[in-house]
Structures are given as structure tokens and as C-alpha cells.
Amino acid sequence: MSMKLYVGNLSYQITEDELSELFSEFGAVESVKIITDRETGQSRGFGFVEMASKEEGEAAMNELNGKEHNSRALVVNEARPRQERRPGGGGGGRGGFRSYGGGNRDRY
Image 1 (cartoon, rainbow, N blue to C red):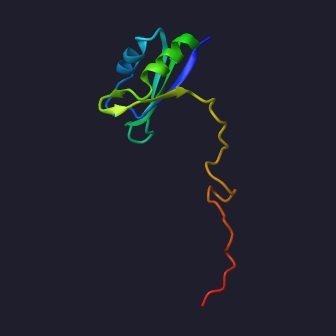
Image 2 (tube, rainbow, N blue to C red):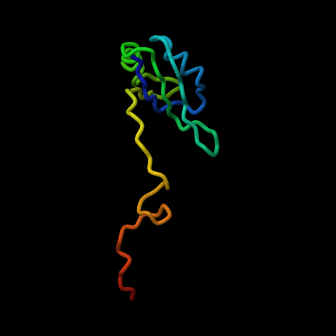
Image 3 (spheres, rainbow, N blue to C red):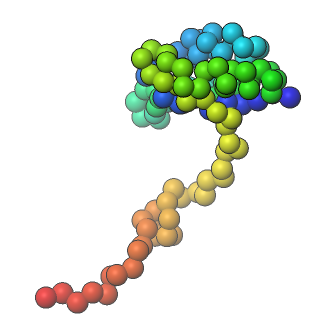
């Protein structure tokens, strides 16, 4: 069974190939995805690596979490399942704007 890892505090210049190479030292890398900004295409400084087995994933996590790479201390832990997002992108049902009350205040 494979293991998906979250990798944070990445250098903005790292490529998916470089990240794959870094993790391949601990076993077979099944996939690598660096998350980028939708508008600019620039890295957001984190990504995901899927290792072929739980043992390989745990070995990579134990060795690389806190290790410096490109002058940054990596954060590596098991990825949490993706949460469902509600359509509409934001809270209170008024076009994405949240209402926090307090709209009936007296004005001086």
C-alpha cells in the first residue's frame, strides 16, 4: 500500500524532478506534485510525494522532516485526506460574503 506525504517549506525554485530525486533515496516514488498558484504559476512552497509503500514513506518522513534543503528546513508528514469544498467559495450564502451580524447599530 502506498503512502502520500505532505512536503512543506520548499524552496520556490525546486522542480518536481528534483523533489522526486530527493525522495527516491528512500524507495520508489510513484508521484510528485508541487502546488502552484493558479494565476501566476509560481510554487506555493509545498507539495505532495507518493511513495510506493508505507515503509518507504515512513523512512523518507523520518529522515527528511526537519532536514535542510536549499537553506530551508523541510516539513514532511503524512498527508491528510483532502476535504470536500462547498461550491461558491465562501461562507454565509450571500455571494461568498460572510455575515457576522452587528448590522443594526445606532449611528451618531
